[in-house]
Length: 331
Ligand SMILES: NC(=O)c1ccc[n+]([C@@H]2O[C@H](COP(=O)([O-])OP(=O)(O)OC[C@H]3O[C@@H](n4cnc5c(N)ncnc54)[C@H](OP(=O)(O)O)[C@@H]3O)[C@@H](O)[C@H]2O)c1
Image 1 (cartoon, rainbow, N blue to C red):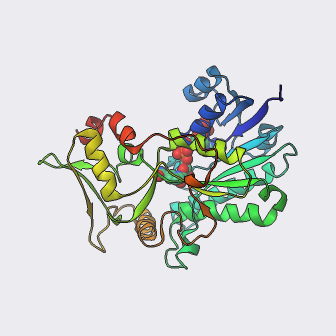
Image 2 (tube, helix red, strand yellow):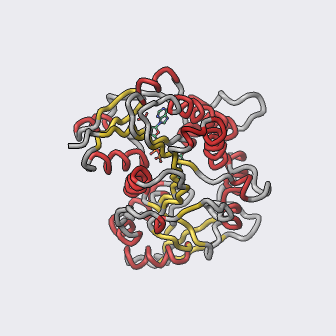
Image 3 (cartoon, rainbow, N blue to C red):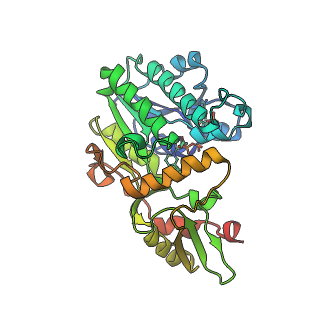
């Protein structure tokens, strides 16, 4: 029997990492080391009960990373921009005059570079899968420079590519598409039900532009498994369906029986007005997606799920919408 291989998963208690843990726990020949800052949390304990080795590691404490990555055959790395931005403990960390999201992006880059430095030292490593997003500044030719949570991940990706060619030769990129859970959990993107009973998806997204929709908590592990099994060097935009928001609303209606429409706000009117730094980021974010594509469509290295030879069959957007409790969202 072939010896068991080890995948080490950063963000194991989260959406993407949690799905990676799920898939590898049931993959023959693999064992899973799940990293978390808090090994006694309910999520961490549940992973341990299912057979993962749960190990404490903190991207802010570099000394915890080397032992956590030791012996890995594969590593999945994800960072949490919105966790940094939303954590009240970070409120006073920006430098004078620096916006909180600018600080969060800088800090995310620092965390990722620290993890990449540690991962480059893992002699047993065969595959590194890095959760990235497109470089909005680059692919918009400098037009949209405030999509901090995209650019941060791309900046650290460039660091790995430039500083560690040996590691880079073992690396594939997983760009997670637009999470379907945004419509369930994120007040900025949830549909709103009018008195006429129609659910309205209101925002700045162009209703006719195709987007990569993913159930990150279900699909990520399948993408990562294929990226681990297949040759390195892939830059995958991960999605279960590639739809416009108008098409998405039609699927929503089929799945839920609730009439729906998408409303694109007129130019100059934003969905989010406060806090000001978030408005700046989201205005650029939606405009970048509309004009240059979520994945930076001019990037010639992008591959799609159909380009993976070993990808498992993924579930549908219809089924995702069908199983949600929309009364919690729509009242
Ligand atoms: N929303 C979208 O549509 C979308 C699309 C693509 C990409 N993204 C990106 O997805 C990322 C978040 O990923 P996710 O949704 O999979 O995560 P998540 O569910 O928000 O969970 C965050 C994970 O990060 C871990 N973590 C946070 N800080 C850490 C630290 N200092 N050291 C070690 N682990 C840490 C947490 O672990 P513990 O708490 O257990 O330590 C947790 O497992 C964000 O950066 C976002 O930009 C979002």
